[in-house]
Image (tube, rainbow, N blue to C red; front, side, top):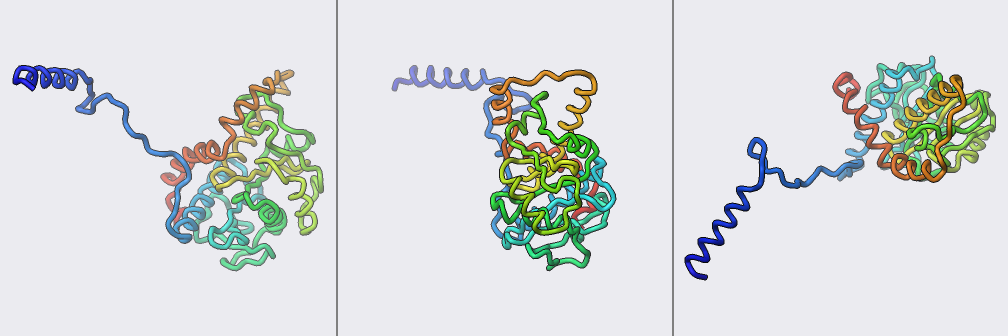
Length: 283
């Protein structure tokens, strides 16, 4: 290449480079982004600690949202190394005060194998049956939230009346078995699990809401979203006759906002806040 041609090429490259705008020295060009999704772990110990921390964070958030009702309510998550055992909050302890060190590890026989507090019998009966019947379920959540209880008394499913309620369109069930009765017998737990054999959520008639997920984050967020969807439908029906979203639009929305990743992602905003306001949860 001649000297003149080389100089011309250099000038063109320099001009093209100079044409890229920047702010504070950062060129305005596409950048690689951080991947979003549940983390992966090198050891069961790391994953166990992660699940425990997010379980306690979820319980604290439930307490903050007013989902506590005396001794009622529980969230469970499988142990990553021993999947026939699950971690759960102890009986008769405030959601708002729980720490990682307070958690119980319970086997499917209902025996506490780590921890010194009793386990809520209903938590064992219902959640153990769910975990046993549905191997894909890693976590389950239940609380006596006010709007969930009110809606459960109607004996019906949620309607697709808001974008958010479409998360649950054709993906939740109504369970009538033992509705309103305190579930303490293992056979009743199995009936409940049989009726809740699919979907991310259940409305247990005259009782309340249950949600499940591939992570504790997902299960917790579905519960929060379902409680609010119940609230919205109760408000809308008190004011008039809500208009339903078309089936194809409801399905389209569910496929984009009701996925396991979407549930996990939505919980992260709540987790980010609670670990700053409640750092003692890690103790």
